[in-house]
Image (cartoon, rainbow, N blue to C red; front, side):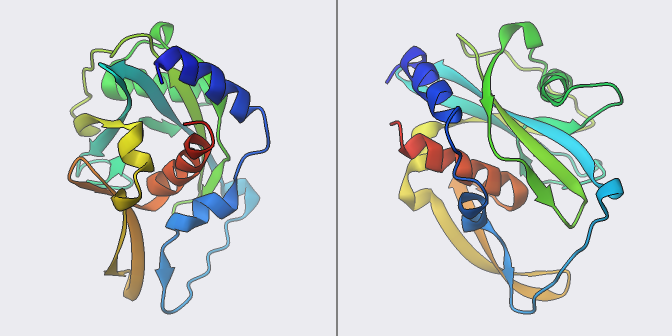
Length: 208
């Protein structure tokens, strides 16, 4: 399937009911001892990320970044380009601005075609709004060295392949947990990013 056909099918699918929380929760970390967090509504921080699709030869890819160890949140983790909403900014603008700031892709080269289900991350208080965009060609990237250690692209067919969905035991915040992750480009993508990609994977499986 070429990128133009995917763009049409995906935009039509995103107008329908989304898989939502049940699909996100496939990648939910499950501690042996249940840990509950309550975030007062006034303390929720709105944020946005971008899944930017683009063609490479006969396949379609999107970017992921490895965060530096100097950022405030999610040090060293694999993430989608994105960040916190600024005052007076629309969330779609947040996704585009952060993508430009983090990996140097101009908003003018991106067409936004829809969004996935917002994800509240109780540990940090962020509510993440995932947007999906397209670029006609593979964009050139220029990373912000303060935030992004590296950027790489992942094929959508790698994401939907069942063997990339794996799980392992880890100790997080003193609790033994089962941590699902996607094994993509020899990197482990877990946590909020994997939950967003889980819904995206479910959507893709309905149109590929």
